[in-house]
Length: 149
Image (cartoon, rainbow, N blue to C red):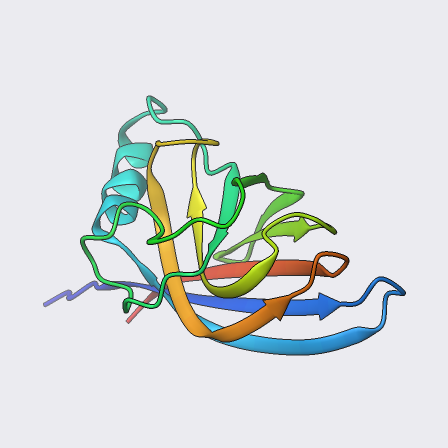
């Protein structure tokens, strides 16, 4: 008997730097691929009617990530276009840099989306506060590993 199961595991790496480029804080956090994200992945296997994931958002919401989530609880600023997307060895990695003045404040949540507004959310994570000052930059590298179990 063949029993195939597919697993998705997400991991988010945050690197906060001050105005001079000094690292203030680094952190790694697990994420949740939400129901809408799973539906998106399945739809891409059937065709290309949905836009690819293209934006990342940061917010200040503190409600735990849930499978039914479709957006961040409290967006800080606006979603940022992804700086890069790479897919290698069953891992897709999304990278976005939030420059000075972008998403300033108490950052506690993040998400990946396929549009600058509305659209589909692939995944969401909630974490302990990262205080991003107005002149700080925050680089977020988000990896999703697809594996059989």
